[in-house]
Image (cartoon, rainbow, N blue to C red):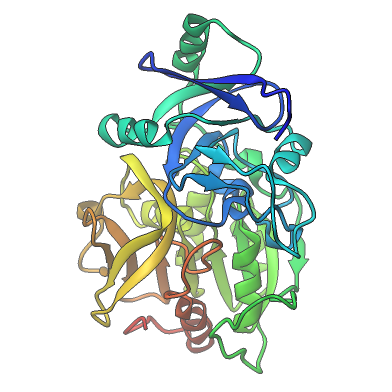
Length: 386
């Protein structure tokens, strides 16, 4: 932390203003304000492309005490618009760390605010829902900040995928190469299968898990056509996570519709589930405050087991809009009964709303990458997940 203790402010569209201390870059950023309940994993959260255009509040009171290790990032830069914590640790202790959390935010141009009542902020977001806001180290007038918060257009109806996806085709061949990585629980297959991943904001750890499962991974932009995909002769297609509202991502939805007719095995995560759901005729809606954290309980209806999952989404698929004759529900959120996973009865296709790759979070659902490999090899619908 800087010795200057420069003031910073966080204003919400409802007129609430929090006064705190700056611990990141100088500047002013408008975005949606949300919260994450994970106890650790702040750098994975900061670099998750799904957080584009969001100011993230951490509910766990202390952040930054283990610094930043570049082995743990999920993309090439910090993706959040701002970062809100109760206490930003002035020291860090971790033999892997290369810099402090504050230095990391500053080098990426991201403003942070600390020493505010994050419990009060989170309670407000829980009651009223995620709100538009503005974080600033420059503007001191509260009324001006609230006006800026109200002027932010929000997430609904906006295409944020364009801001985070790759623009060119690339190959990914990195598994868990770090000497500090723990066991994945996946038995890497000896026969390599080809998978094409739609990059709608693809997290690096998803790519690593696909490699660990036995896939040769080709990453293509979200705007890729059916012909672009089929030209790679894939054994499977993966539709990635990503930020914001799925409804405006018409280009990917239309491509998925075209690929469904080809019956190439397909797996989607988070935004990927929502895009596949829309391609199948389903509708999506915005959740009140979203699911963000590493402790979300999900029931696997195929096995009857409860999985503790990592989640980050503000939209969901309306279960009642899916064709029950063709789609079977595989996973349900135990907190609010929202859809967390489905499989197709006739096509080799399944998708989940949560993040089995963790980063951060538990590894309860890691088996899904192995299930994808099995489905890609058999070309048949999955009868049971897990």
